[in-house]
Image (cartoon, rainbow, N blue to C red; front, side, top):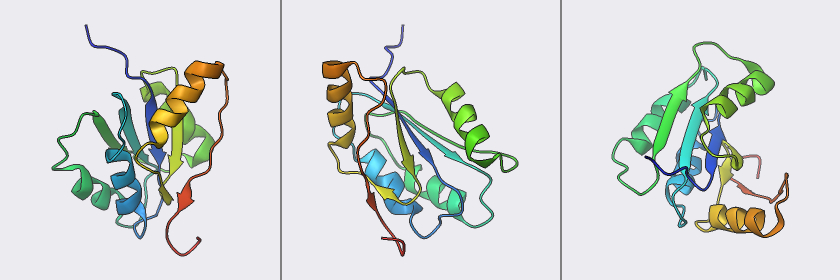
Length: 132
């Protein structure tokens, strides 16, 4: 039987080819107990999904990675709902395609969740790219 990951780290990019490489790499670099990484592109019309595939193709780290792309743009709410259906953990950590997350960020969220039982935990991420 496969153990449920401590969290599902979900990245929701849309047309962010200039920042997606750094955003994806920051998820792959997470130093924490096993999590699942879900990268769900909302039918970007630029090279976002191709860059995602390039970054993850040689990844051999401890976290399973699912990269997928919607056939049509669902918009934020339906895209979130679709992504939730893919997650296997009750704890979901969300990020955008222009977020850079420190290597220990996921573990801090996991620890906070376990200590408090909070249904919502907010923490800021560093934005990369021109909108800094």
